[in-house]
Length: 114
Image (cartoon, rainbow, N blue to C red; front, side, top):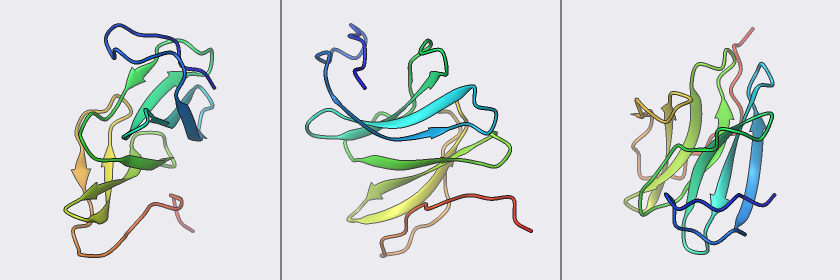
């Protein structure tokens, strides 16, 4: 996938996009974008419009997974040398850290349960 140029982000046109994940309704896609030195999370509509950067920091954020109802996105964030699991609203606000151990936790899937 090629991300359109954006003066707000100031990045060249081509970057590596990976881990695309559809929202439960199929109306949005969240994905990782690697710019050559860092990985951040983005969201775009199924039509390819409304590209929005969800994370912005100096360390990688990766592995986005939609919650079962689409109300939150879980992801992995590297902090102080370990991977921690965080969640956020689909617009990137209200980030909440779920783990904080000296271990390498990561999000694999998120389901409503039995």
